[in-house]
Image 1: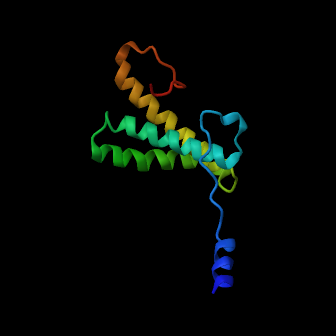
Image 2: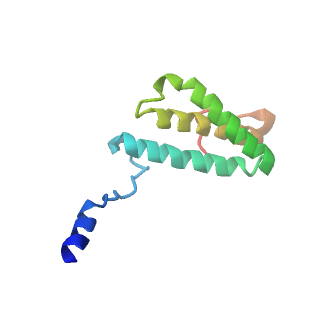
Length: 114
């Protein structure tokens, strides 16, 4: 019984700790992908304050398709999730900040949510 239990414990995958997204220079590709997804979720949350729920749902579908098409040449690679997440994040942030700053502008497409 103990042998079986120890075999199960040793064969289970080890879960790494969450990557430090504040220090991305020292992250591997998996960490960068995770952090870019977190950025995307934050941008989606910000955009939910601007768009109605139905519109946001449709936008999420369309923007994912657009970003997937733009980066389709990288689809099989490890960088693909990073590029698609960054694409979605930038578009979401742009729309959110455009709503926030209005016609006067004063923003760049690289700005992050504050």
